[in-house]
Image (cartoon, rainbow, N blue to C red; front, side):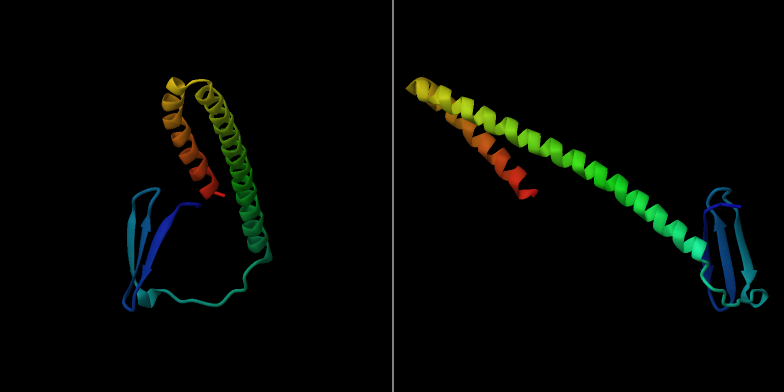
Length: 115
């Protein structure tokens, strides 16, 4: 029926819990038999197709995140460059800009660690 279930099998009983409905079933193990059936190719193809689609979604999300991180690094480098220019303009500004430059360099270092 397409419901998600949990199945527990022991020597004496089989328990089935239906997560969608909330029903719990229990059967004596002697009522159940098994036989080996081959794995259907369609099931395998469907599984591979699903995994490929999931991988593609993750790849797209990763690429977007990487582009954002690269952009943040470029912005941080530009802000550092501007802070260094301001710092070189006077001794008073140099002290104020050094702290900002240190923080931005730490940000850049963290971004480089993620590579």
